[in-house]
Structure formats: C-alpha cells, structure tokens
Image (cartoon, rainbow, N blue to C red; front, side, top):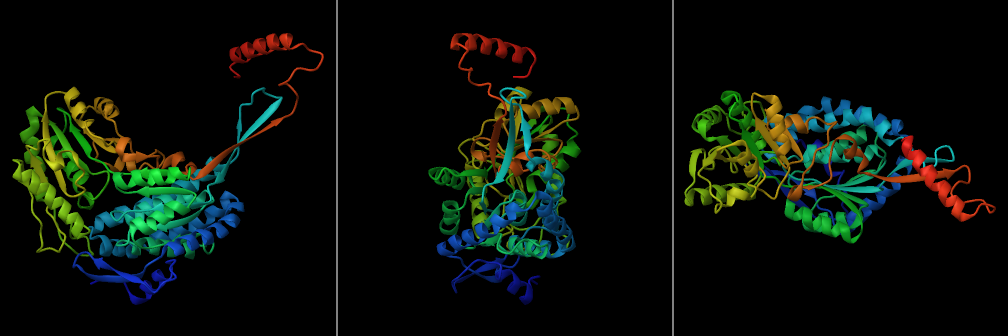
Length: 514
C-alpha cells in the first residue's frame, strides 16, 4: 500500500509553482499503479518561479551566513525526525530497497552538517597578498550567483536535489528546482521541511514537467545551473548555458571500473563488489559496471561473486526484507534487457541473473553477471545503468589500468587489494574523479570534505568540499592603494624608476613576498 496520504499530497502539491490546471500522474513503482496526480508547470511558471526566488534572494543574501545557517540547523533535525516519511516516499516513487532509501537520505544530512561547520569560514572575506605589501591591501569577497537552477534525476531524487541546493541556499542564493517528473514527491517533501525550518517564503521554487521544455526553461532563465543526469543531456545544457555565459556544474554518466589485485581477499572483495555493483539495483552513477580480475584468480573470484549474489533478497515492500529493489521505469527495464540480450546473442556468458522478474513487480530485473563480453556488444562501452556487471581477465597491473582507463567516462573507480599502499597507487593511476580502495563508492562519496565529480564525459565541476559551496558564488577582488607606489614622482626620471622597480622585484622574490 502506498504511504502517501491525502493530506500529505495536498501539502506537497501546494509547493509546486504552477498556474495551470494541467496535471500528470506518477507511478507507484512496486505495483505499476497510480501514485499521485501532480501539477504541471509551464514555461511561464518557470519565469515566475525565477522572479519570486530572486525577490526573496535579495533579502536572504543580506543576512549574515550564521543567520542563514540557523534554518539549516532546524532542517537537519527535521530531516532526521521525518526520515521514515522520506524513505517511504523514495521507495514509492523509485522502487528502491529500504536500505538504499535510508542511505539516500543520509547524503543531505551529511552535506548539511558539513556546511554548517565550514560555510562561515569559506564565505568570509579573505586577505590576499598585495602587489606592494603595506602600500596596498587586497581582499577577496564572495557573493551569491543569484538564482541557481537545479535539475535533478530520478535515481536519487532526494539526495541529488538537496545535496546540491542546500549549499546553494547557504551561499545566499535562491533556487529553482526541477526534479524528474516521476520522482518529485521526495524533493517536494524536502522543500516542505525547509519551509518548516524557517526558509524565507519564495526562496526555493519547485517546477514540474517535461525535461526538455521545463528543464530547458530553467537553463535559459537561471543565473547558474546544476545538473545531474546523462552525458548527452549534460553536453546540451553546457552548450545552452554557454550561449548566455552562465556557469554550470554537471555530474554525468559513468562506466566505472573495479580492479581486483592479485593479493585481494577474494571473499571480502566479492562482498564489496556486490554492494558496489548492485546498490539501488545498479541505478547509481557511481556503480561498478566493469570488474578486472587477474587470470590466476579469475575463476575463484567469479565463483565467490556469484555465490554472494545468490544470497541477495530481491523484492518489493516498504520494510527491510529486501536487499535489492526494482528498476524505476519501463524505460530502464527496456535498456537493461536490451543490453543483456544483445550480449547473450553475441556470445557472452551469463553467470548469474539475465532475466526480468515480473513475478516480483513490473520493473524488476535480476542482478546479472556477464563474462566473455567483447567490444561489439553494447554493454562493453555504453553505460547500462542497471544491475549488470561484466568480468574481464587481465595479465598484469599495467594492463588492468589501461583497460580501466579505456573509456570516455571518468567518474568513479575501485581497487581491491590487501597491500593498501599499492592499491592506493593503482587507484591514483585511474582517470576518475573519485577512486576507492576496498570499497565500491561510499568511502569517497560519503567523505563530504573531499570534492566529488567527473572527468571527460562524466562531467564538469565538483560537489562536496569547498568547491561544492563556492561554485555557487562569484568571487570579487577589492584592492585599496594606501600609498602611491605604482607611478614615479614627477621629479624621478622613468629610467631610474625602471631600475628601482627591477631591484624591488628581485628583493620581493628573495624575501618570498611576491
């Protein structure tokens, strides 16, 4: 039974910026039945949302950071208090297992607590070294961009909406949020919690509707764009934002590798790989889709990996009885099925899974392991974004690194081995924004003091860390000349001044002042 009550749905619908009577229906993923009828926004509503957010943002930006942070202290408490409702909504609209829903809501909690500690220091004015110390003083100032447009995906709709919009708000911006249409309930509930926590009226606006139309209007309207989604759409957004000379940050796709070193603990690595590959049914941009295993231990690892997969419990439900949930949509199921069917038809071996499970629900697919995958198969290079992983043998460490780097993507990587120093050296050789030793993804992603983002076709910019906040600001330099030192007095010939200047530059360098 859906956890969505009439009173809660009424409250959430009121948070949508929509002037039309047009609605659309979302799906309760476990059953395929109707979940909620939600208002649909128009392009005009996006412009209205921007103006309302901008009006509120001007006063919000005038408040000192510590004053703004008081809202987020209260939000953090409310989020943890309402965690079961958030998890219920996430499961209903995505079909993920309960453990994945709880893991998802942990991200905004971690991000909030991190910036509660770090934002005052990151946003304060900073003294910078001047051209002539003592004669000139220089300060670096941070000011908000204005109104930030956040376009978030369906796989982690709560974490990837609020993990981005929280630092944007803390930095003094307004926000127009465009979540995926299917997975709008949990972001709307998050907006409700922020307003309960005291966020100024109008500062956060939510618009719903077709991605190209409503998302496109957000890109064409807002002062900065944060996007999480496919590489193809990200490239279009970057080009569109570039036409307006508006900045953007993009976290995009991945075909993430895991390298199993020859000294790895096979049993522990198999357990780590199961989580790294099949968390959220593989619908995670950080998920491992390629595992490279030494020839000498390939069969032993494959057997241990398949055995661990066999222990997974897959099924629907709002409790903790399942380890693996559903795919989120018919489209996702179609992509996964096509990738596996194509590989099987071209000679790949299916070690585990390889079929949908309509007996569990309309979009369930078994966790699947393939071997003998060749370059002519779609899943060899393309992101599957589902519970499918391919195993490949390798001869030596250099070959493993070369294979891991043979991709247009560069988002996440994993290296498994007992010698931690060696494993860390191998991880540093992989072209990826984050790399984890003896873990699939959570160690890097959960370390919110460290930046997280992609290289190559996996995106631009970083979330988390200092970059995750400062990307939402403009940096300005204010220099005050206290004494005239840049031009010679009238009585001093320019030739003499030139020699004095050269001597001064040598002295400044020797004293390490410039």
